[in-house]
Image 1 (cartoon, rainbow, N blue to C red):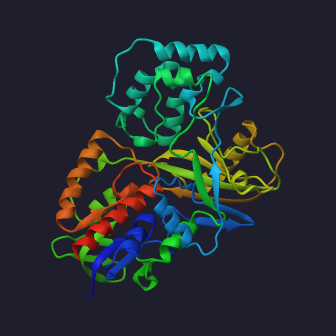
Image 2 (cartoon, rainbow, N blue to C red):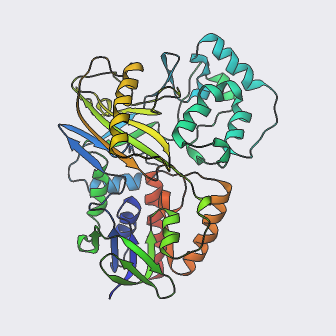
Image 3 (tube, rainbow, N blue to C red):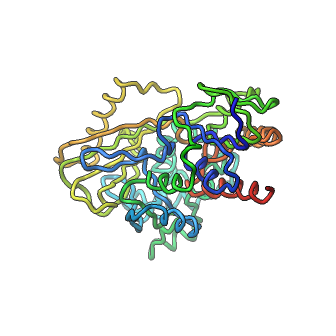
Amino acid sequence: MEKTRFLVIGAGVTGLSFAAHLADKDYLVCEAEDEPGGYCRSVRRDGFTWDYSGHFFHFRHKDIETWLVSRMQGERVRTVVKDSRIHYAGRLIDFPFQKNIHQLPFDEFLECLVDLFAERPEDLSNFKAMLLSRFGRGTCEKFLFPYNEKLYATDLATLDVDAMGRFFPHANPVEIVRGFRRTDNSSYNSTFTYPEGGAFQYIRALLSAVDGARVSLGERVISLDLERKLARTERREIAFEHVVSSAPFPKLLELSGTRFDPAIYSWNKVLIYNLGFDAKGLSGVHWIYYPDRELCFYRVGFYDNIFDSDRMSLYVELGFPSNAELGPEQIEVMRERVLADLARAGVIQGQRLVAWHHVVLDPAYVHITQRSLADVAAHKKRLAAHGVHSLGRYGSWTYCSIEDNIVEARELAAAFNASG
């Protein structure tokens, strides 16, 4: 039997950040996959660089950004002023939709404007009700409902009113009307940074501060005995004092033998196609949102407009329920549907596909509900009493940024550093 003071489950951003900032080097990082990074991985194919998804960092803590970039060994990091649009009624309008209704066809603009000021009681009982009570039916039915239903692949009325936290672009009627003359689309991600080698460069930076001999790839933790403080993997048994896990929270509950109601935890899958073409397409725009229910994807991003490259390079995102079958046959069929829909939307205009890659994120977006919030809090408290700490987007079953994961992991490491 092996022993370690800190058993870290998952070699993604959260787990590696914790190990990198921990003063006590008696740790072991177990990663089920054969390479580190979690969803923050990059793919290079036929001259294209793609991520598992569009991982663009929006740093609020400059010390974190400086620390990471300093460990990238000369990697060029681009700082980009975001240009994001919405494809609606055959035109591209600025994001967010609710702040730019004046860019709609005139009759639809009037519809949204009248609905915005229509009297109605404020309803904050769930996410869907909040959208309707704050923005009106016109804006909701044209964008907020169809887009988010495509994204989450669920009934929006089941989600908590604060399901997207600080990332939802709220706007009151006064701000919306003021924007008719002078648009203000500033948001948390008005600028973002991106390494030319892909988002995996951030993982490489974290790995440079971690003892590689203490990172075990291809080793899945299959059970945790909280009373005996013993973990079992597919290879061995490991005695621990503390566990720091970024595994999806219901999976951690299963591993630890914790009784819970699985119906409380729901999520969607996201199927991502990375597509490389032989010629340039639309210039300037970094990603486009698609609320049209007839189009299979909800967002398309343009890597070539970040890299200033001369061939169109896309990521295309499609949301599915967690029980959707996405085997090889479905992947091939959906790829042809994606290409056809890209042509319908005007993204493809004669370019030829020369390279592609796909990945399924499962889970992708977790469904934050009032029940899940309460259940996570209760189980986290119990697990912490046994020395088990669950962090990150999936470990906390929440909606957050990659930087938030780093901050959370760094703070937990600092607490252990202070306690000795």
